[in-house]
Length: 266
Image: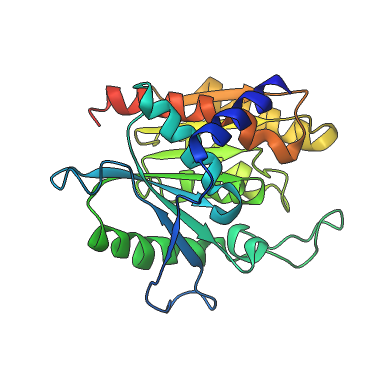
């Protein structure tokens, strides 16, 4: 729990009293039924350095997790431990429907739910990301971050559209979902040796039983078979519950991202 305490203290000290995010209007989606609510946090230098472009970090469940990411990123940047990013918070009205790539038929989960992941990625790829690139000075280096079922979408993106994002952060990804289709497809992608250059961060908390076994097998397959072009970072927080694994891992995820961007010339 010391890790979470330190992360929260950084968040409190850097986050100030007001939100760093503002809501923006985007065109009504032609792809998804309910256009997500989008919030944006611009880096401190954005207004003063009008020639600078910035990588973009897309945070799923942005209203819940955006300030956490923004606070840690800002604190790291003050100590030359991260690059500044434009942060885009994405908030879905139906997170299971939008984030789960397949429909779950396992009676241990919400039967019949999910299946909209690819349509949601179509929205990101064809509508949201082009809109952000038009409205802001972006460097075209995109990062996606998500927790739990949103982390599952991160893994799905990683293998199904490997060039859409250049870095992926999946905190306690729900790789147990359904018939494990996403985990199996991602493993096949790694084993195919076709993986493109990318940064992948994953972690797990105190989840146990089959949930932990599925994750461990998945993580081990990636670790043992990844190409040299894949920068992989894994964390295990056995004393941290599922709800807090994003708080526990955000420092390591962002610190690793900074090193990867440095090696990539970002």
